[in-house]
Image: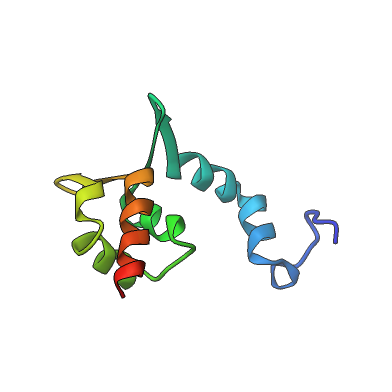
Length: 96
């Protein structure tokens, strides 16, 4: 389906709508950054995307339990070390 200025919004998928609004690119760029060989995600939305689109509530539970060692938080800023988080998640799943 070709998107143009006459395409009804109701006929678009979420991805097409995000692309048309320019949101998809911004979200991907902001979510994961590499610093000195380490990868980080930012905020609860970063945790949600890291684990495949889990709910907001589940991301908070993860942050407050087994991911605690992979997270740095100062005030409202949350930074998650991706490699450490995945290692902790693997260990968490093995213990269950």
